[in-house]
Length: 289
Image (cartoon, rainbow, N blue to C red; front, side, top):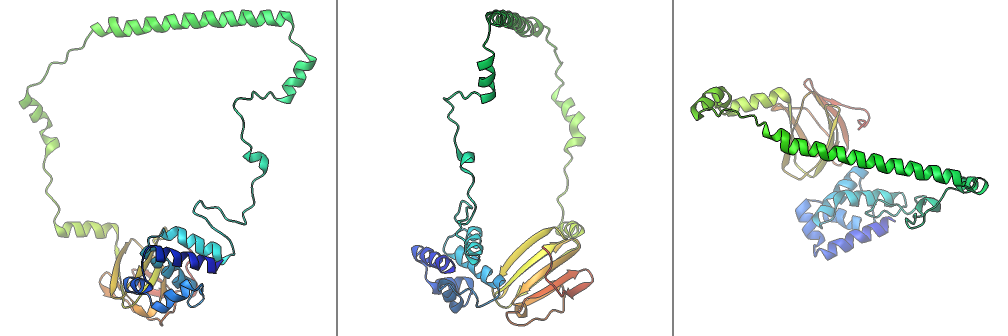
């Protein structure tokens, strides 16, 4: 399945008339990594790197990144995924659930047919049904007459009692509403900065010297994911803390509220860290998000 997935990626690249060299130049991903992907070799780096590279590859050739990642996950488990969300090994629904009901056939439950077979309608019950039908018809006529009378009343009789509201002079209207239209002075740059920091008290600057990947949980509720290219940066705000997974940790540096944080890692190494107002802490296991 992985070989078939890789072949589909290569076919999409060729259709877009994009070379591997162009993708490497655009994404800053090493050419040998791209060649491994197209050859169906997905074990050359940890999974988080592989997914990050596949996402950038898909974006470069015009594919839907999320769909491609779902296809990759399905292929890893030996399954075939299509864009409708179906999986080849998925258990099919029972045939009876798929049977379409023909609206032209008036199906009568078997219990009703059985009752009618042993209890045929008598002439007396037929007369009672006709009487009930006549009563319903008379009630409908009476109700329609009442509705017509109400429409005539509201449309012609009651509408004649118009309520006339004297119009105020223009100057009086302006005077009465003047407090509502007071001009509010625009905020200065310092005021905007202060209000922003009051809402998000932590400002984290992430700098990357080489291609790296970061997934983080902000304040325990918002998940964000980034692929940082060489010599790029990302500014993220939070109220209390950040929990994150850092890929290629040797290429990443952090500044919290413009103060550098002590952070070290090795090339291609994945680190788990927590950052709050007290600083940076290394985690022993992957954050749960």
